[in-house]
Length: 272
Image (cartoon, rainbow, N blue to C red; front, side):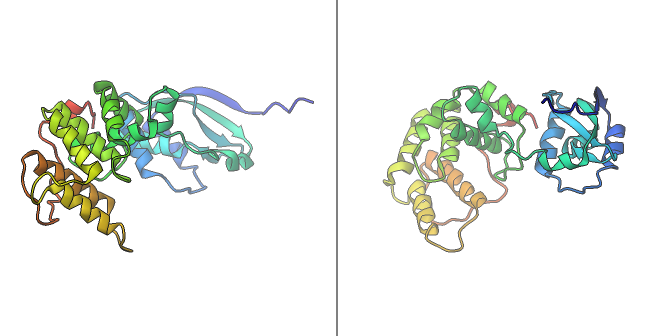
């Protein structure tokens, strides 16, 4: 026996900020909004990179918004309209089945495209972008922003492969530093930097790589560990000092500095 045909209506609709506001007013479920995802969508809308992929805005028979609040919020935030399928008349109980699966990550997208080491590549692209943005805190880049970096720098995959299995939980940032250094005139030092992080050998007295590596080793044994952001600042500082053959005697790092010379959003292919 065939299932009953759903009694719904649907239409490809241009959602304006005003229409988005109207739809959000019937969002009586008051679900939590993922602000990072909203910001990603909003950036894509502003940059005309928010492509219609078949997703819909769903409204129930009792006129309750069931799905789409983050896209609608991004529409208002960006003050930019977007196209979507607007589906009305759904049974209210289907809300339990919406978005029950895991969201597709950027690493998933890379894997579907046949890219090698997809998870490591995705994480490394994030660090390449963070250094370009002069901000170690990942507030979420959209897929189109990540694609922009990868399209501009397809050889990132080589640095990802070079930095694999270098140091636990640090390969992505080490791969990013390796790639940027290679692109800005320090290819040989970039290789030496990664190799030194891998084997832990001192290159000279008060070697910054050895200093930071041992600091992180000791920190891993503590109950209260340093933050990931601070760890990444220290790793980048180890490169900054190493490329100039400077010594490192303490772990003080300027919170305002997270940069590599010559690496800007424009050079990275990052649209902010």
